[in-house]
Image (cartoon, rainbow, N blue to C red):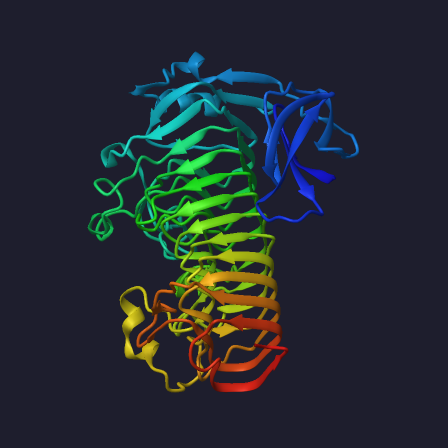
Length: 521
C-alpha cells in the first residue's frame, strides 16, 4: 500500500492512499500510529486526530497481510491553546457565543490554536484573521442563529477615496452586491487552517433562508464560508451542512484547499452548492462527500462586469477522490464565467444520482474573455446520473437569460459579448443507469465548441429510465434513452465509446465540422 501526507497540523494528520482502485472509497484498511491501531477506514483520504504537537509519529497502513512502508511524520509546533470556554463561550446550545468565539480568534497569536471542544455553540457570524489555526473537535458543533437583525452586511461596492478604484466586500452570483456576512468570513487573510471532525451548521430551512421570495430584495444570503482575496487557506475534516446558500465560496483567492469534508443539504434546498471557486487560482478539492440541493462544485469567474473589469479566470483547479450525491451537477463550469476557466482536472470521482455529471453552462453575453479551456475529466464512475455530459451554450437562468439574443439558434455576429468553449477531454468513464441522454452538446452557431475528445467511455441506461430535459435552455425537447446529441461543434472525437440500451437513432448531429466515432456501439 502506498500513501502520502496531504496535511499536518499540530494535532492532526491527513493522508491519502495512492495507486489503488476506488474513487472516494477503497478496501478497508487500518491506520497504525507507533505500532498501535488508531482507526479503521475505507476512505481514500482520511484524517487522524488527537495528536501531540512537535512530536514524531511512525505511521503504517495495514490491510490483511499487506503492510505499507513505515513513515515518520512530525507534527507542527504549537505555541499556546486558546480554549473558547476560557473566553466565556458556553456551548450549551442556547447562549449566543458569537462574542466569545470572535474574541478567541482575534486574541490567538501566531502558532497558537483556537480550540472548540464538546458542545453546541450558537453564533451569528465570525471573521477570520491571518496566521490562524482553529480546531473544531468531533464532539463540537457551531450552530448558526438565523437572525438577520444580528448579521452585518458586506457592501457590494465601496468607491476608493481617489475615485479611481473600488473595494468589493459583498457578492452574489458573479456581481458585486450587498450580502449578509457569512458564518465564517475571511477578507484578505492568509495562512489559515480550520480543521477537526466537528460540524458547522448553517441552520437554514424553508422558513428562514431557502424560500426564494426571501432573497429577491435586500442583501444576498450568507454562505457558511466566504473567502475574499485570501491566500493559503485550508479547510479539513469538518462537516458543513444546511447552509443558507453556497456552502464554501472562495473568491479572488489562491492556494485554497478543501480536504476530507462532508457537505450536506436537503436535495430540495435552494442554491446550496457545495464548493464554488470564483476567479481563483490553485484550488485543491479532495476527499469530499457532497450531498446538496444544487451543484456539488461550480467553477465561476464573475458575470460580464467583473470579468471585463478584473479579467481574473478560475484556473489550476484539481478535484479528486470525491463522492457527489444528488444535486444538479457533479462538476459544473459556469454559468458566471465572464473571465474564463482554464486547466481544470477532475479525476477518480464517483457521481451518484446527480442530475448531470460534467456540466458546462454559458451563453451569449458572458463576453469574449469567457473562454473555457483545458478541462480534463478522467477515471470517473457515474451511477443514476440523468445526463452524464452536458455542454449548454444557451443557459437561460436570470432575467436576461430568456431574451431573444440568448435563445436564438440562428448565427449572430461575433462581438465582445460572445463566449467560447475550447478543448474538453473525457477519458476512462463508466456511466450506469442513465436516463435522458448520453451526450448533449449544444454550441453557439457563430462560436462553435472547439473540440471534445472522449476515450474509453461506456454509457448504459436504467431499465426504468425517466424522460426529461437535458439542459436548462429554451426549446430543449424532452427525451429518454437518447444516444448522442451534438449541435455546433468544430470537432468531436469518440474512441472506444460505447452506448448501450439507447432508443431510436444513436447519433443526432447538426453543424459538426469534424466527427469521428471509432469502435462505437
